[in-house]
Image (cartoon, rainbow, N blue to C red):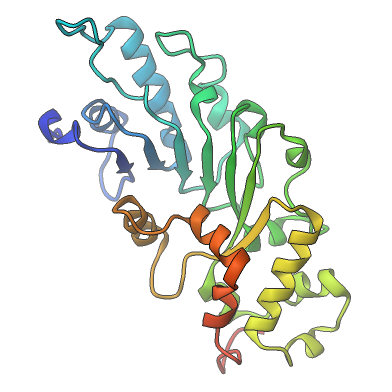
Length: 270
């Protein structure tokens, strides 16, 4: 069943994820029906759908209205991507060097990128995104993958247009495990000493550590225990505070620290 274009024309934010029997064609049909999408969440394997959409746009240029204005067509307005699954270099290969009808490379339009899952692969496609200004990475996934705990994957610190790096911490994971390897790497303290501190104290130490390394780095709790990645994304799409705005606000009033409990829950994984 196709999404009627008379409905899709109003969509500016789109979360697409196969939860049953899905096909590449059904994904493409949804993207085509939403020509004005600016903010897209999708699994990394569905990046091929962007390539197919551009091919279709090249073969069938958008119609021109009586006043000489072209009708909108996906993905001409796209500038923000949230990847729901881990990504490898070859996932982006299809889009490198691909141009929109006006001549602009599609990847040059992307200014905001969030990677939700980096447990398997720590690859970040920053070299393909020259105009990237906002990047969000899952901090606990990076800590698990890296032999030594670094701020961000190598080379990203020198990205010329990058203005903000938001390091997200899943609150459930943060409260459910001591993450002693991460904490020990910050100050060399033993895990048993670290467990004496509150979640708030530990979070503050992590945030200050990365802020001292790079003023663009912000650490936030996302998603919170009361939500998952999808509900958080949907709330932002409906006008709630974005992770970028939360990061800026937390730098000023430390509200994440104040909302964390004073002690870790009993029975957490050790």
